[in-house]
Length: 156
Image (cartoon, rainbow, N blue to C red; front, top):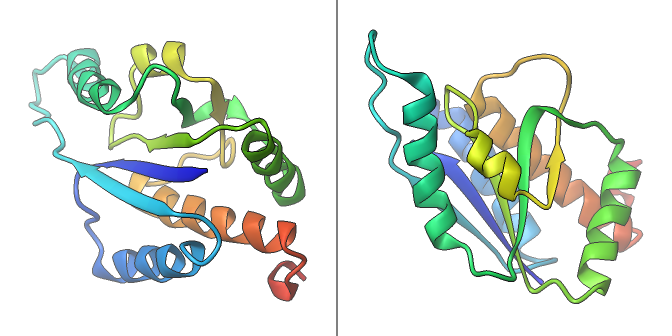
């Protein structure tokens, strides 16, 4: 299984980017992982936010193959604890999933087009977080999940 994480726009805080890269390096010891940073659409004061999210979604969907799995992180998604998330990833890997894409939207969130195409929609919390912080949290939870699966002490 290979993981692809899609981020919209560059991370605005260098310290968060440092943390993301730290977890990326650790995660790659467990599973091949790649981050794809897509340019964010311009958000104008009078602009149509749904149109912005749809344009971003179209670019994301062009990256995916027909049989690739898509996981979208969205506030309205399913909540789960770290152990359940680890089991989910293990089940996905055991099912033969080879390419798994995870999308964390930009400042406006994600398009309904992505939610419709998604195989799974997860939430980090009912609370709203900045998308940069959500990136770091997802990276940490991915690393935690794989250490749980390997029985490593990180989770304790």
